[in-house]
Amino acid sequence: MSGSAKRSITVTMDGSNKSANLPLFEATLGPPVADIRKLYGDLGIFTYDPGYGATASCESKITYIDGDEGVLLYRGYPIEQLAEQSNFLEICYLLLNGDLPNAKQREEFELGVMRHTMLHEQIRQFYNGFRRDAHPMAVMCGVVGALSAFYHDSLDIHDPESRRISAFRLIAKVPTIAAWAYKYSIGQPFMYPRNDLTYAENFLHMFHAVPAESYKVNPVLSRAMDLIMILHADHEQNASTSTVRLAGSTGANPFACIAAGIASLWGPAHGGANEAVLKMLTHIGHVKNIPAFLEEVKDRDNHEMLWGFGHRVYKNYDPRARIIQKACHDVLNELGFKGDPLLDLAMELEKIALNDRYFIDRKLYPNVDFYSGIILKAMGFPTSMFTALFAVSRTVGWVSQWQEMMEDPQQRIGRPRQIYTGAPRRDYVPISRRD
Image 1 (cartoon, one colour):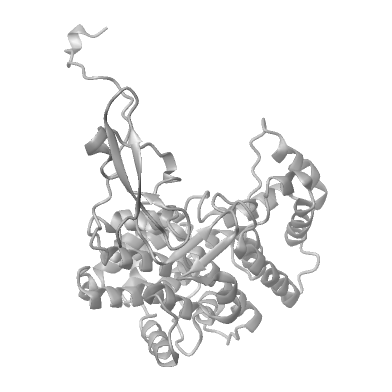
Image 2 (image 1 turned 90 degrees about the horizontal axis):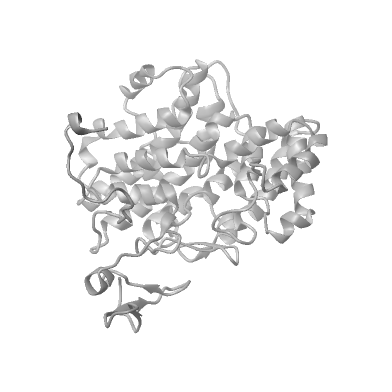
């Protein structure tokens, strides 16, 4: 921990004269944190916290969340201000370096990222090893993990310059990897990146364009894509970020760590939530089925899930949802989506849920996954690509967290404890004597 503790708490074990004095460290924002590292040495006990919901696994200066108040800050800046006034590559600089860039720094950083957007040409052949119907996240796990086999010159995790180059490469190449995963799945030629476009425009071009005709990126759609990337860039110590840090604590190279994060993100309870939203809407089928579906959601004996509403961290309105809601309607208006059954269903579900006392009382408001899924569907992305797009956005957060971890002098290999509830010690019994 940086700084010294000014307060402490004392833990006394019942029926014993043993006690432990635990330093209490103050956070810049949020509750103080008790340092429990002496607890085992002083009292011979560990703490039990399934899911780590009450445990700080690290010290970080990158992202702050107040779930009760619906607050999200990147390096101290409110997400609302960044979403309105910034762009994704500037957010990348902020997360990696701690401050917003000046004009020269921003230009140099954007140039540094964009000159790494191409993939080693042999990686084209790597895709041929996958089935055409492979899930894009499976392809991304494999290709991102394989980058360490192609870029040996930046694998020294203890060298700041190597870490900087790896950061550029990951942020620049993951969009290309994701776009090529889609192109491979539908049998279209890979589109090479264009460095004259913005980060979001370049991704849309690689995803939608074909060599046979020119493709002009719609500015409303590129802005929506840039916004989605900003809102998903980092989210504190979530499952995939914790996975990246845990993998990184072993000394694994950054490409392997990010591949581990992609694998963790793949789960429907994490990065797959916006894909689950579209599957839920398909399951509902028609606007007239919404009331019956919501009654099933309210029934505790029924296991029907309302995907895209509520959030494990945000006990109030997801601040990202407020921002992306407008972008969602802008995209639908721009593309003239009037009468699309799935999107009409989504808008009606939003309206009903926002006015239903059951959901209001439980603060089950639409979250960022609800709106981002609708936007991506309207922009022509198949649901299988939703989580891959999340990975494109979150790569900078993973890299920033990994980089911060590597610079932390207190970093140790991750090794959670457990409560063992298996059989007590027992002796081996020869098979002839077993019943």
